[in-house]
Image: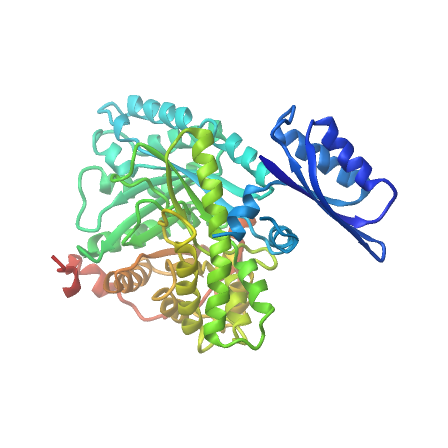
Length: 89
Length: 452
């Protein structure tokens, strides 16, 4: 089972560190990261493996949400099924 | 394989274009709750609903978290209560409404639909008593919705029921006049009612349905409009294709959520209703889609054609995305719940007559239309009869949800708030149809009902 974490907002030091830190805390493995900074806008899409997650998926979502509001970033954590079902026949 | 563009598109749809799951609705059969003692029956009803739907809200919230998609409403539909009321002729049917309200409170759902009667060919035991109790039932409860089916293509239109419903709609508005006549907003009169509709106020659990099942109603007018905005010079066929592709994506999400809810609750998955259901929120309007197609304002000449194309394209796109499509499936046009319709009605461009024409090609009917408070019951009945005739002859579902604004006249507004929005009082014809309505009887079924 995999999930997608997207992070968009103003660039600051340590965003990737903090997001992956939460992943490590929940025993969630980062598989792939696409990241770019255009002018000072930070955009990252992270594909993570949640098979070995050590708590409810909802807890991970909450932790990411609170990190987002703390850093003023928009962070979405969603199960990959929603993208697969919407965009493939 | 996931790609960045698709991921961002999904997030944009949810964040900026008001994409959501409008409702997950659990249909529950109450046929095993029938009892000649009305108090015992009410207790069985309460127990069964709480037993089946106790975890519905929790499951909905879990799915919202997993997929990051808002599920706006969690609802329940039940067997038409008139069937239970039939077994206890001396009991007051309002007791059932109160039991349903208690169950709604315990489960934490937004609405329970099914305070209903199906009388398209005539009244059976329990039907008339239930219908006469609707004004009180909708007055003393908050989250109960009522519907009455008065006609069908197969059986014609029961004009005695049409006459009665004119009075009932008026009385329901009068009883809740101190709350912006909200009772009438929870009451819908159908022709060709469907048995697996997840949307309120017309949801009920038909007798042909299984004991318990989960339906999903999707939404997404904002997404369709945003998709069209990108192609200002596209031809109509291209627009139809864009709508189909968008409806496919929206419906796939509904299918995913329904399948997951069914798994979490251990209940079979019923249908996805792939309707475009507007809300009064900015950017969530069906009228604005029609305007995006090239109308200066919804309600002007050309509106019916645009709506027909939209309705058809939504179905074609959605039908491949789900294993079981059902319910009403199309585009809704509830006036008070759609920002663009409200503006067009205030401007006088969108009239009752134009709405009636639109209902011949949309998924339901005259929905959430505020009419002057001094409207006579016979005029309400006549509007219901017109609408039912469109449904009967065109073999489609039509419905009437009128709200007589007690004490208000044309030019004033009723404010419901929330998803129900607000509606300007719309003008009606001042000539009477009372003689026609008072004749009673039944309009025979049309020729094409004889298909066998």
